[in-house]
Length: 291
Ligand SMILES: C[S@@+](CC[C@H](N)C(=O)[O-])C[C@H]1O[C@@H](n2cnc3c(N)ncnc32)[C@H](O)[C@@H]1O
Image 1 (cartoon, rainbow, N blue to C red):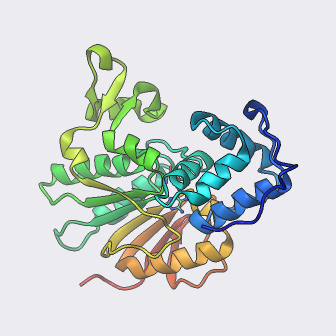
Image 2: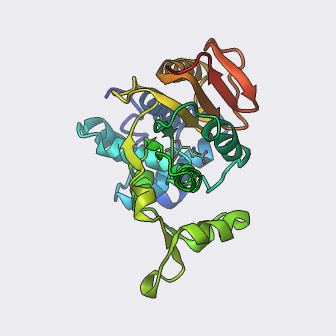
């Protein structure tokens, strides 16, 4: 990994990390790295956010100056520091049933209208700590189990190893259960006892529907196969228009004919070449019928 020289020796005075202040060069070094490695744009106006998150990370890793941290980041061939940088700079905010109309559409228009009893393949790209793929699995289990039909298989991916670790555990504190869906979720989840009082856990049959993997969306996809449904919500907002365009094109190529792409409600594919049909807000479909 290469980067611009950050400071002269005279400039490189150590700063107390509790009030980490980044020079313009240091800020650009980090934002260039974030753009290059994981596509995330941290433009002007994000200086304080970046400084605060970086300060916290450097404290945790026991670095006493930005220079020291950045040198280590460059020297580290394992990519371990880069992963931790990504984890600290990206936002993992998510919730069960986030943007609920998408889950209504999934059940009423995709599950209910599927042609044959073959298992659907669904990808939750940028799944964060797992609430999105578990919501998909839970509504799918309710729908298909009642009809004795095959359950979908779900791939859930993210760039953040920390978020994926939480997702793989499938265990959430009660305050993570979305208020309006809490009774429904409580009914479907296992309730913790003893020292797990106040926690809820996914049932094994729900967990077994999902495979978790680390995938960086700005790199070419590993061999993931084709999907009937892709959720890629609330991550493209961090990417440049060009990065978004390339990603959407790759999603379009990865969908089966007739497959659906869901994006976040504040994201749009306007101005991009993708060949997908706009169905309703934040939902797109690839033309054709799967044989
Ligand atoms: C705000 S969360 C969205 C979670 C979920 N899709 C939702 O809508 O609730 C954004 C996620 O995108 C992930 N992310 C950021 N850059 C990424 C990249 N280049 N490749 C894959 N995931 C990325 C972050 O780690 C974070 O978990």
